[in-house]
Image (cartoon, rainbow, N blue to C red; front, side, top):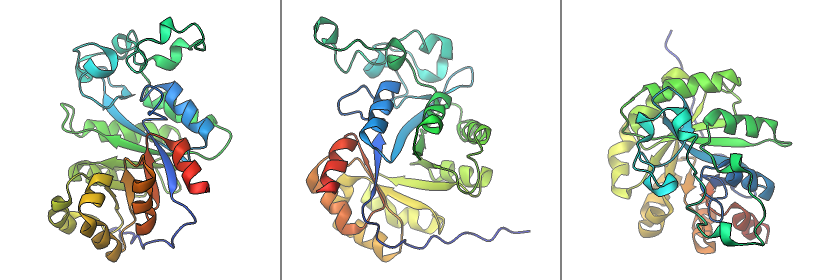
Length: 273
């Protein structure tokens, strides 16, 4: 039997958009570390955003770049390394390289600066004392292709989060990746990320009626027509990466339902004024 597609109608304008911590509270704390996510939760973030990549031995880890030069000071590739090898690296020191010389700096839990597995992040969110949502981005291109989405949906299934009512939504710049998630888990919310305004007319005919659209704030600022077209089409909009009061106002004017920010505490402060 052919499945009847869900039609996502543009929801009523919320009192405020959901504040999503981009790679954790990453403005001040090293991205994708457990410390960054715990800080974001403690600051009141409504949701957590992460990027996931697959290791050589099949683990999903929260890392943005395909190589580790920027965040772990090594030329290694995530996809060619086992989890045990990644676990030996320091993913936090690059953010504050002089912290060890600061006698007044608080002691850092070594575990908070290690590579973070997606499973650990999901456990952290599940165990927190309030409802927390997650926006998980699969990175492409990758040598593992569609295995990334299959492994992701399997992992979500271990938490019962691969079905309707899940606190998780899956994002990607790849139409194929988003389509794959929808086939594997038809009731999961999905977000197609858009990094160029002029791509939208090409993408529009192949995008599902109920897909959320995730434009970058730079494109909304530089090409206001993109936001107007999305609103007119009744699309739910999640925007990245929103870090200033001016950019937040653009989102408020459009009635977006989520802002993804490196500075979740600052966004919450602005929204509370």
